Length: 482
Image: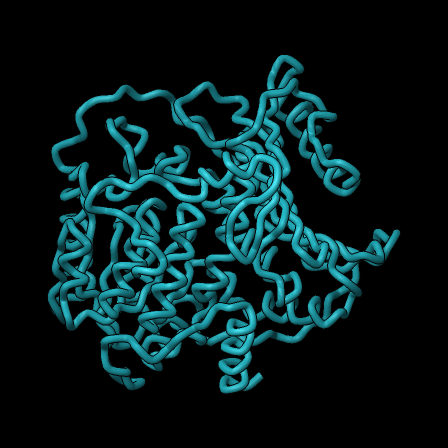
């Protein structure tokens, strides 16, 4: 497609699902191709360093602010950045993101904080007229993701999700071919987030270190006491601050999985998960092992597999597979016809993405003041994140049952039972989980894509998980009042 056709297509598709990628109300002036973009980076550990390097690699982009509640991390990042830019401009270091957002000369903010901050900074950024690049997952819960969508719609800023595969023209081309029916009707889109990790131990509660502004680090998260596993990284494995690996690394593969299904599908109508936190005896709350499934209104399904334990012979899988109604499948970049073990080349054309990779495409969209140019826009981000939230919420409502291949409750879904059995065999034979262990088996939750609420059995308990409680001063606004 041409760029104009792509914009028209994206806007028409969004409007058809009740969601609009507005692009006319950002407070800043539309920038020309040669105009400098001033950006702030919030969150300076780990992924934040990648953000800094990514923006430094773009022409005429100035990192005006670096932001972190840890003064040591902040000082080190500011010093390192000043040395890299060698006096070309001055970088201001602040601990509170609101100070940067108050700068009327700031064009954009780049969010690499813990998950519980992602949506609030995105919303505040939109309200301040700033374009937003936000790490995955864009939301920590379903409701705040919807508020971020409404904020983009109202203020017209560019919001791009940190799902870098959206900038991959080969994946885009594959999905265009799948949706065109090249291999028949897609039945199951399957994602894997299987990378080795170890336990985090058990750290005592106590006073946060003096260099950490605990109030700002917590922000909207209702976390009372500090312990050493929260900062700097292991917050991922606690429900009030993270979302487990399903909506951490897994958000990339979840997004790819959802990207492949029919374009008119938004949210699933069913979701469930089974798993556990095996091998480790530690402080973490989220599962390190999970098989999850979701079904969309048209009958297409997304399966997902998390396997983050570690053992001799561990097979890393961070990838996607596709299964078709006629029995064909795409695995590791090759097509296998029904009943065949002979791989065939895919022979697909590159698909339509905004050039420049994830960093360059965002800057191009900012300069054009065109949200439809984002590779992974706010709507795609919301749909991908909600898919993971629903799976996680099923797990959180689950009951303990004996560790057994028959533990999964999949009804007449033979495909789900087959793929869960493969995960179970890995855990039993590879990891050595014994029959004395327990699975957590979540209920099959039903979901209304229009209202974004659960219906049917378990609805009351499931709806209670759609929105986190927020601390005073850091509340997520209501969607209607954004």
